[in-house]
Image (tube, rainbow over the protein chains, first blue to last red):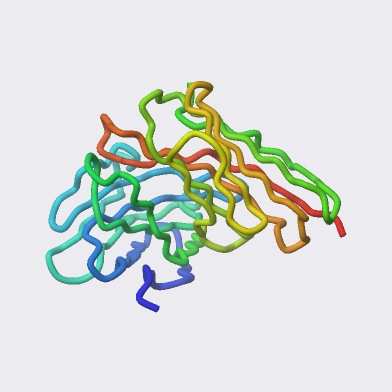
Length: 118
Length: 114
């Protein structure tokens, strides 16, 4: 099963520490999306990346959050100086194509990383 | 106005009944529509996609699309307790001014009572 992989599945951090979440998309997918889901709430879009490029980061908080998708390796969502409000499930999704043509493609989700900030 | 709206529920139906989940969207040129199921503590999984007006059936699931009314629904026949989950509606517009293809609704919580 070469689906979207995320690690770690669970991450506990103390306030002020850094959290680093990794996502490996489906093999051959070059479009990655990160979402945050607070308890009992819906999915909130954070950022859309292609290899080596951030396409849309309109959902990212302006401070402490950053994302990358390097030419080699997984996509990384980085949260610096975590606060309790960052506790949530972070989902990564991938798709084989981006906006425009062939927009019948869906996004495939990884299992998520549950971040708990103490 | 949100791009995609769903009734958050909770929606409760008895086992064996038909569960009807509804979703409206604001972008008139949207082309592709998806229903995801999310169990508590799990990730969303795709259960249905629909692109053309009308009905699309897959087992106990039927998706219905009405582009003129900007409305998409999911019917679950012979509901089972294992169908208890949150159902997310997603819309993939033809054009997205933000670069992000997908708009997700907040989800409808369904409980099937044995």
